[in-house]
Image 1 (cartoon, rainbow, N blue to C red):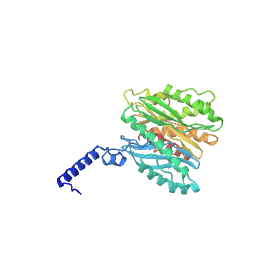
Image 2 (image 1 turned 180 degrees about the vertical axis):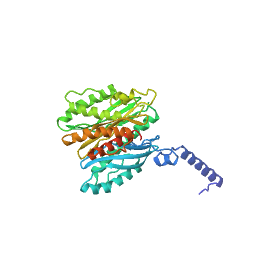
Image 3 (image 1 turned 90 degrees about the vertical axis):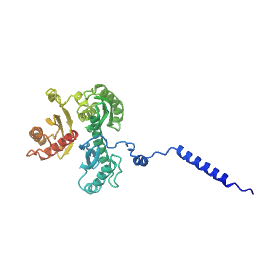
Image 4 (image 1 turned 45 degrees about the vertical axis):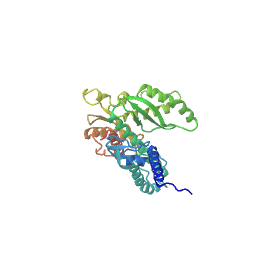
Length: 359
């Protein structure tokens, strides 16, 4: 057999090497989150992720009702990141005490680690985990709205209202606000089952359209859906109350802030903030405050215990709690003698409202 010449072999080997290098350079590297981070780029944001953009302070999510009790999550945020998560409400009593003690710390850690509501349920605590994730998502929605306001009023904000209980089931509304206008409204909860399915499917789309058209909660009830309409309007108003200053939607909402709005024309516009519902032994308590110039100018209880002895306790204690909130400018107020539970619920809901203001 004829042997190849050494020079010829060297030339062929060199040509093969060059061809291989050219081929490798022409191939695009596959993009993955790991390589993006290694290159100093942030991976794509996941749905429900903690909003970036300077959100600081405490943000309290709405209370999520579960089969074993309410779950409510409060986040501490620093520059848009979750630095601490805690459950300010969780199921208690009997077996629930053990489950809460075991599961909540793990859920708190998971929320900080994930920086979103996309966390795994804790084994053996299915209902508590589901309620935790729901309230956590609500807190992130509020933080996202606040971040959007800081970046500019033209950016869209997602605002989720409190759950409004009706005779036929809960109603909860979520709105998207951009440029001071409601651009989208949807019911994330509505009555269901039996006749309610038909009423909901007929009325909710019309209520959604009415909210966008009106730009506020002053919308007409849908005929044949009185209870659903009332719950929708209540939750819608709650969502608009959470709009940060400058969003424009709380002005159109038309409740709570009108008195303060007429004074101090050169000052920042007053904000109306509705706290989460605080459940007490004698009934729910919910507080709405008007804040202007960093001060509470008005406080009112939009829900308070009623019926029997509670009527007397509420009429005596709530006006004093309202005055104390305005005087103190925060939730560090004394309980009213003889109204321990109402006072505790008032302070809890008041703190929730102030959390939305970033204070």
